[in-house]
Amino acid sequence: MNRITWENFGTIEVPCRDGRLLCSPRNPEQEARHWLEQINLRSDDRDIVVVGLGAGHHVRILAASNPLLRVCVVELNAELRQRFLPPASVRVLDPDSEIQKIDYVVGFRPAWQAMEKDYLQVYVKLSQISRPAAQEAAEKAGLVLTAQRIQSLPDQVHFSLKALDFLEEDSAQQEVKIWRCLRELVK
Image (cartoon, rainbow, N blue to C red; front, side):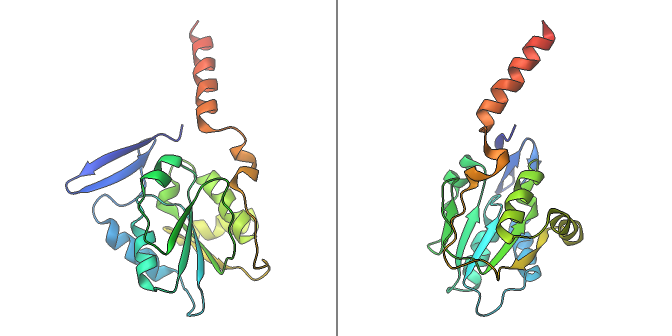
């Protein structure tokens, strides 16, 4: 269903998708620092694409790690995109956005909860690796999909999320169809 709710854990507010937490409820900052330690950015990497926003702690820590980075975040959920207040060096992409240049693509797995296949499809498309290789990387990495260097993409890349198969129907249309089918079953 892709429904976002916000749960309070003391002083920390955590987004949930269909009841599944999108970041650590105890210490999301520590989780984000751990995630950053696992990705191996080179000193000349400037244009980074992060697949999955969650609460955005990992994005803020990534942006703060190097003031020369330009970070784009691909997030499939409109509510998460609208609620996040990004640092100046971060762009949160909507489905019609264009990505100009990519040096590095990395996934934040906790933010993919309840939509793993959809986010994996975006990750595979951006990193131009095979689905089995991406799944193997996801299994090995736990929190982080192994980041992929992007060598074959030209400087100008038009990537529209709407072009992906799974985004043909928006979630509201899918939800209406599901409820209609359920009503038919109950009759």
